[in-house]
Length: 394
Image (tube, rainbow, N blue to C red; front, side, top):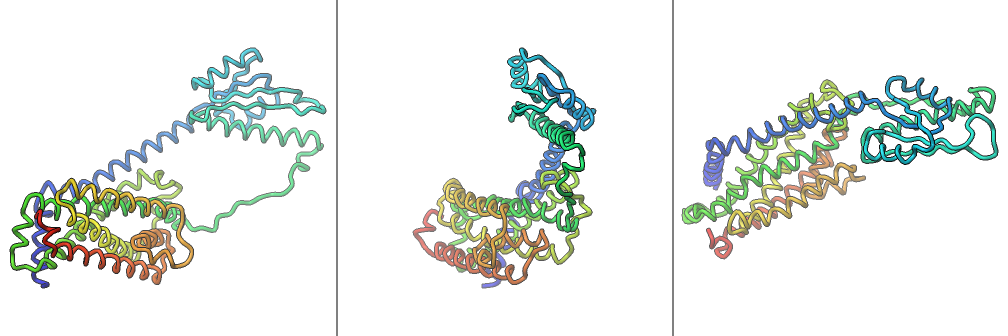
């Protein structure tokens, strides 16, 4: 049995590793593509941030009091350009704001210099679909808040009387913990997608493709037990899937110096202090996650008559896996119940490893649940292999 499974594994792995085009597509291209794509995306996001910081906000005001002009020039001396207009120019100013020629419009109504029974009004207009306008709106709010404090100080006679309390902001999180949280937000979802996509790319061809070409029928006629054929294909596909995912992970790591803004920014590569234990745990959880994905893909590919049909079966499973992986972005479950859910528990465990919150017991629960799930899928696959009706197209 072991020799037969090993022989099938060697055949499948040789087909992948010694086919130059397939090896490049499965192992080299994912990591290279991700490294280039994420580096470009990080560069573009960084450029957008630089453009926003270098942009001078154009704020048009109507009947603005001198106090506002002075306050704005003190807070944003080089970042804000105030253009004063008359009340008759409101329509033209709104048109400029819609076109993006002006970033914000402020209309001041009432007396801002003397006490009166009627409160003066500031009407602020911004354009929410223009990034520069949204940024200008925040700047205007800062100026208005500072102006408000100055008005209160003038009414109360002393700026100290406007202070109700002092606030100091302190963060007890370590640099590596903050970096881990940033990486842990998206990377588990990305690894899940890489694992499934890597297995899907080869998995459909391994069984459904050989059915379609008629090569699987030759293999089924040999004296090798069909169970051994099924297990050999499944184990070899798990190895291919994991290797493809590790290539993608390497691509993400290579792109981090340029793409950390994609993961939220605010950390440097030196803050990532993962050691050998974290990498070993990560690979272990990825291995069992890969095993569960491969078992699903192999079963669905076995039930299909050709690659096109296999793609139709696997696509909904891919969407379900994607939803499960996306759910981990919004937090981890309270308690241990979530780790008993196949695949979901592994993805949560990967996130916990990256955020330095890994629990060996919960990780064990995730591994056991996935093993049981993969075993059930494998038994169904073996049963399908033994069914002449299922394999009649082979």
